[in-house]
Image (cartoon, rainbow, N blue to C red; front, side, top):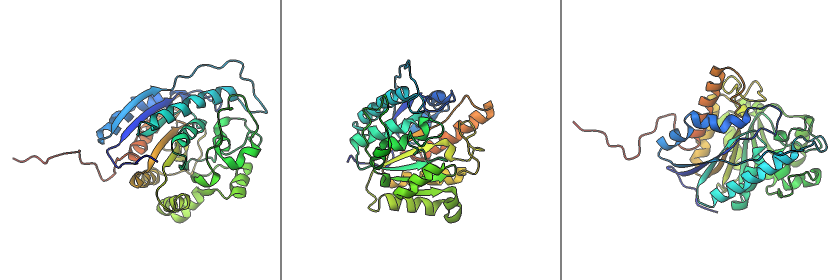
Length: 323
């Protein structure tokens, strides 16, 4: 396992302009909008060395018919193969990675690529949704609700072969996953979570225990030794839709800005954040004000994962001027 350093860090940014994992257009605009909102410059202002590698080059897929009700399998599979390859390549250069989505089907590629370099990773999944449907349990057929089922070894008996996914070998255990912020979980997903004993903290537990206790418990359950690299998959709908309204499947009653920033601070403090997904920003949804609020709050949270402190950040090497 490569070393995970404290700030300042070397960070690679890669965009995944893709929206075929769900029915709404616009999520493919997320990477560009986050860059325009100043994400890279704000990361650099914290002393980080940031290289923006641009977007994964995706080619249109023709004749992508549904298979067993699953929509756009070939497009999702081939796009995520490219993301997996990109993440693997960049991680080997000894840097942390931020993947900018894109819908949450992107986690198939980003986690798979991460696991090729750091197979001991753990996953903190911050989301309103569990995204662990199998192709046979999903009521919608949208793959952004299925990424974890393609990746977990314990679920392979429940996942049929789909076109475009022959490269996607399972690479994690269900016991490597911790959910935070769930509040819209379908019955079949709840059955999967309970059958396999997946670590799960819904908004009910956040309300009951508080975000500090929830984060501490989740990290302790995933990794009692405190040594494993962390893959943080952040769907912006994990936050309350009053904070990130420009997203495709908003669910009321989500994490507050304070709770989300605290979570990001605690993950940053571990020094083990290896890959961060930022998923489901959709600048095509909502008014300009809602778009700007979504982008601003998402940038604030993302930079907090990489060293921004609410108490303020002293510039590196700053000398207080003398008269």
